[in-house]
Image 1 (cartoon, one colour):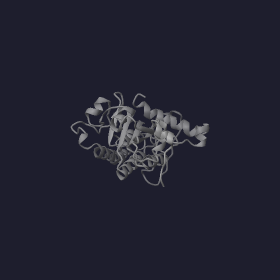
Image 2 (cartoon, rainbow, N blue to C red):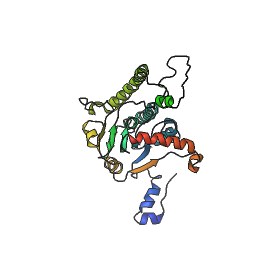
Image 3 (tube, helix red, strand yellow):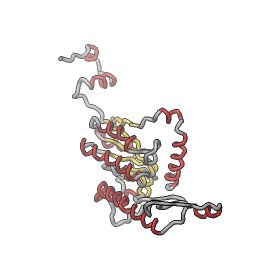
Image 4 (cartoon, helix red, strand yellow):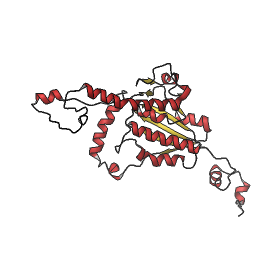
Length: 284
């Protein structure tokens, strides 16, 4: 079928809006690069507030669906679940390799622990001068109340089938064997995190430094250690890579009806307490 253009369109210089409309009919006209932007902000876990693979899978799949010029990750997370971090990062990396689409991560306030795990799913990582990066480690935290129980005259009675069933009971004094058992559980998780970072960053890492002791670094320090690639912000960096007319397409999660109406109060309140504790580790 022949395509004819209106005479008036041929007689004058086409306006930008007209050219934009005609791009779908004229494939030889230049098209700006499109980069979907996935925001990975908040703690990582299974709650309704948290980042997790189930909630993010549709966004990630959509970002890679039409083979864009690249995909950008906007990371601002103090960490959380190691499993959810691994699942999300693996999904991003799998699609990037399948579609042959580069992925760029941009860190805002913090990419620590699981947040850095997510950032390492990208081909390169860019930070602000004041971004906090690292915390390549595993933590178990709880409270102990045996003194309070004794003071109030409350006796704790625990009956188990299996000696490890009451592991790290907060109402009993801490036991050396419980500490040893928890450290044994943490070791393979920590190693998986280390392997992921090494696989992602490769020879860029300064392996003469002690990178895997759960320490954190700021901006240029992280660049010097090879944990990230440089100081840059998302829009100017993507324009430098893909041209001044690059189109950033933000993708965000949809909130459920109850969340929009503010009715999930119990889950929101409990989640906020946990979130606050994770952010507080980095002074945020």
